[in-house]
Length: 74
Picture 1 (spheres, helix red, strand yellow):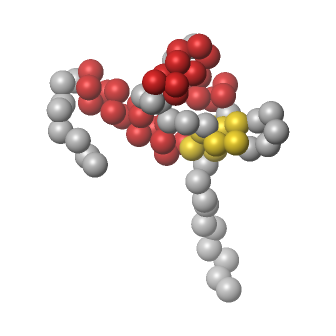
Picture 2: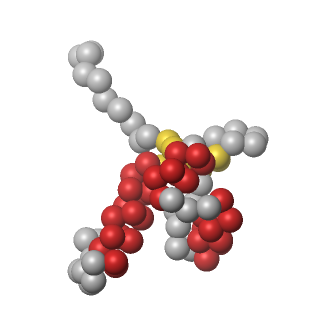
């Protein structure tokens, strides 16, 4: 077996998501409810996190919308 350092998906906790997006807690949860923000991943009984890649994709999409770029990368 080689000693390559492969990383799996990175998880962001709520305060990290809030800092990266600039959104308030209520806004994040309203957007989750409306289906416009990534859903959290359960980490335990009272803990959730978000996939960093999904949050980054959401931010990138918001920038595309704000800049008027209607092309989708999907």
